[in-house]
Image 1 (spheres, rainbow, N blue to C red):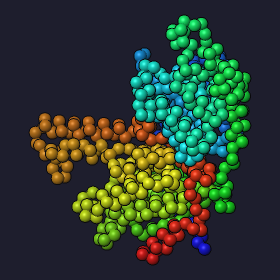
Image 2: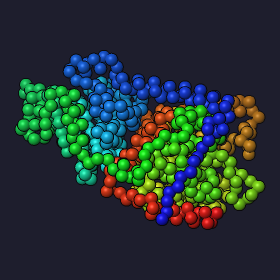
Image 3: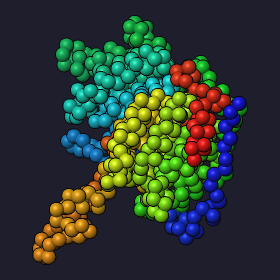
Image 4: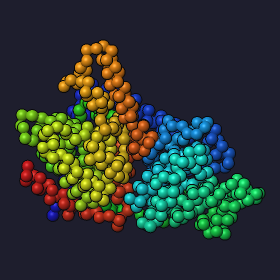
Length: 577
């Protein structure tokens, strides 16, 4: 009978890295972390104290106050897509839309992790802005794929009309939210909605399709608000009189129950969640309990170099992310530029695929080494096979990216990297097991795609303050742009001072533009990544996401560890090695 045996990985910090380098990395990383935390707090304030007071004057709670009551005491809320629309302005006069006016987060309720979608009522009364629908749909997608309950806290005055052309008509515009509602319902995913204020026009369909729908005494749901009805029919009415709980609880039957206020609403939602089946997580832990790593996750702040060109040991990072710093590394002697193996996070099994940054031996030319952070034939084949095995065994995969791309040149083409890469892309495209992607530093070129970048639909993609997401580095792209004016060593050919200055200025402009494009906040702003987290938060986010992968049962295959194909892979790999 096969048995999973995990081995200790990592060493104490004083052995893992030079003390001076650790101190300098830690200092620089802390500054970047402070920016993340400060910007989160800025976004959390919505439109600021004036609008918070306006909400309170109506006898309502702000959205964050509602979430703090909804969550289990002592637990943490894990937001996603916090930085959507960060730094952008819309309409005239220009207005901001912090977090696209909607909070999406993973919240623990009666021990069960839920996906919560809540309009921020301090931002234009919870209006939908450009990318608000896409942000809501992304959260719904997580709920659908992991069969995790979805809770809606609706307090929305409809589309922000000056920008309606960017939110109303598109394939993933506002209307697609209601399709996602329908798909969630069709797949048996619980949806519970609370309407705590405005709920106008298309937004009314979102709570209606939910399994349970509650309304406060201040809430209303209408196809058209009173102002529009007055204009069209010259009637003296209010939105509450035409679509309040008197109508929808007692006459139309569009809502299930009325409650007096926000706090009672949250209490009722919690009661409904408590009725759902308990989590399957304890079952899938196979007798194990969550355990802290032997080494502190906060040490990653000093282990991960801020300079993307500096090499580090990925195994030391893994040791600070996984339970008890235990890891079963598979195929360690093949494709050494990649690390593959199995660990437990939150007491649950996961597969880990990570880039090795260190120089590795060339598999054919024994006197040569190859730089890490690239995909070569052996590594691609290795992670393709490992990914397929995880999928076969039902083990969620965590991808730790720090990749410069695929190898290039004559050797790469002779080895058929295009073919091997296509095999990997096919594998990841057809896998059904949940996959989670972390962009540690570099996420470049087709390597970003091959290692389960966002276009390949991971459950969630996390970035750090160091993440550089682009086709290639700015310097490389500048060289490519001006290649005809450079020699074989990439030096400017001309001796004419004016022409040389023009080339230098042009190359610098290209490099600066690409460097700006690689800002992780820009990627998060346009939903090219799901969340920016500080590196010492990575374990907490991963613990939550891995638990969500196992919480529901019966919707995907999860083999017990005795019959994993991974055991066969280990034997074959050891024999061939």
